[in-house]
Every structure is written in C-alpha cells, then in structure tokens.
Image 1 (cartoon, helix red, strand yellow):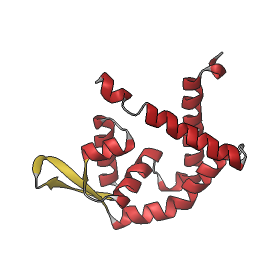
Image 2 (spheres, one colour; image 1 turned 120 degrees about the vertical axis):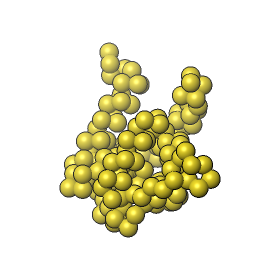
Image 3 (spheres, helix red, strand yellow; image 1 turned 30 degrees about the vertical axis):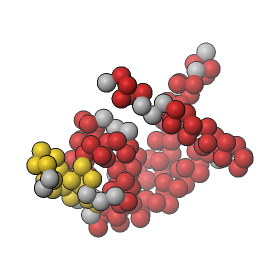
Length: 145
C-alpha cells in the first residue's frame, strides 16, 4: 500500500539519494544540504540567510544551523550586513571552493547512480515531471505560513 503513495516514494527516493551521496562523498564529511549551500554561494556570493534558505527551500532554523557548521569548518565566511545589521552575509571561502571541486565528481556519480535504472528518455521525462511538480507546488509552504 505504501508503494502506491507518491509522497512515500518521493521520501524514499530522497533517502536513496542521500545514501548514494554519502557513499560517494563520505571522505569530506559534508551533507547534501551543506553541498547545496556551498553550491549556491559559489554562484551567488554574499547572500543573507533568508536568501540562502529560499534558494534551497530550507527553513530559517535549518539554514542557520548549516551555515554555522560550514563556518566552523572554514568553508564559508560570514559578516554583518552593512545595510541591515540584524542579518549576516555569507561567502564561500577558498577551502569551500576546493571542497566543491573535490566533491563534484562524487555528486555527479551519485546523481547518475540514482537515475541509472532509467533509460535516457525516461531520465529526461522524470526530471521534467519532477520540475513540473515542484514548480506547481512551490508556494505551498508560503501559503500555509
């Protein structure tokens, strides 16, 4: 019965992806969420916590906790926002960029392993359908808040 529920299957697939990521990237002690934040900061330096959370669809508490851990590891630097002293801006460090570089192939392998059971045509269709579902429900959290 659970295997007929899309929500269950999505959660289970997420668990599978996390396991594949950890298998490939375990030597660097980085989680998929940390990797996501490093990726976001590599493309958009000096984001505030709210923007980072929105970029990765993370709540405020989770974002703050992950940023703290990344700062402790020396992978990001945070500074008080000169335009709003209540917020802090984050930027990826050279060590953070090196970590992304070192984990890039592992992340790619995890992504490929996740989709390996699908044909190329089904991979494209699956990714497109996932994108459509996420986009259609993007504001569900905001609507409930």
